[in-house]
Image (tube, rainbow, N blue to C red; front, side, top):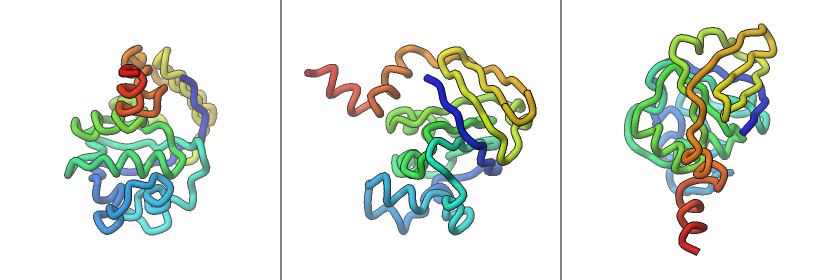
Length: 163
């Protein structure tokens, strides 16, 4: 699984209400949620994002209430990957269940600046920052998680397995 895109940095302890405020939870439509992604942090934040871009987060990204809408909003905004220092555990599981790849890299996240061009090889666990030459390694994506992501999330994965 390879990804290329521009980095969009967000801060530390970004909760699910900042990712997608409660007032937008009247739908589960990825497009509608994506239009409001990160609006709890900054209105119109998502207007800077192009399909394929990559969110880069600080510590404890996705803390707060458990809502599947948060990873759906990120995907709906066109971002298939979030690289972070660390993730809230429930968000981590929800993200993979919804088909959003998360890569946890600890303090190495500081090597990435907002706007940097990134190239990710998730299977190998390598993130290359094409803007500054930095190379960050993380644990390779396990085959079981890659299979879930390849199907667009856990529900689609299970449906196919049951057929």
